[in-house]
Image (cartoon, rainbow, N blue to C red; front, side, top):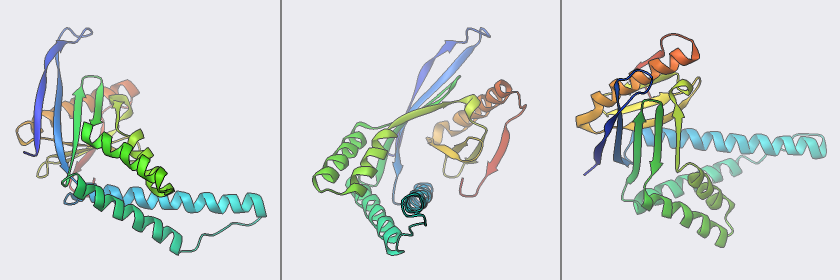
Amino acid sequence: MQGGQETIPRQPDLRTGRESTTIEWTYRIPLLTSRFMLWDFVRVTVMSVSIMYVLVALMGWVVDGEPALLPLQVPLMVGGILLALFFIVGVLLGNRFTMTFVVKPDGVTYSSGAREKRWNRAAVLFGALGRSATTTGAGLLATASEQGGWKWSDLHSARYFPRQRVISLRNSWRTVLRLHCTAEDYERIRAAVAAGLERGAAVRGTGAPVSGGTGGRG
């Protein structure tokens, strides 16, 4: 079973008097076989290594008066370690990462499953015991992002992938969350997202939300 979905009963909207639907569902997301997860991993890894490279260069400039450039082997090694950790976690989790999504009238939220939270804390512990800053840092980052959410006014557009039943939500410059939907409720979730983006655009006073279209990396 790849995903399950539970619909929360409708609640009246105090401003309009109409009923508004909150959609909540749990989905077991593929890790090693999902192009979305692989693309996000590559993007996060490149950003993390680039930030590390820039910070070290700036520290060298502040301390010694000239940028300190890391050897090329260091970013490659860090990227290799992160790739190995991603593969190991994927195998240990059975190539599935459980997440619960909630699409509400005022925004969208997500949270990781209980098993995933335990693994995040184990990564922090093993990294500390093994004196591995990379493993500890990866565990801390995963722990910090176990749950979160955005108001519709903070989301500017969405890209829709009906074949994969994925909706990528974007702020003004990047993808912040991907909704992995069940087959039976994809269209209903898509409609709720479109309506939410319209409300968010109205709050920002920018008119209609930007249409992200379909296809591409998302």
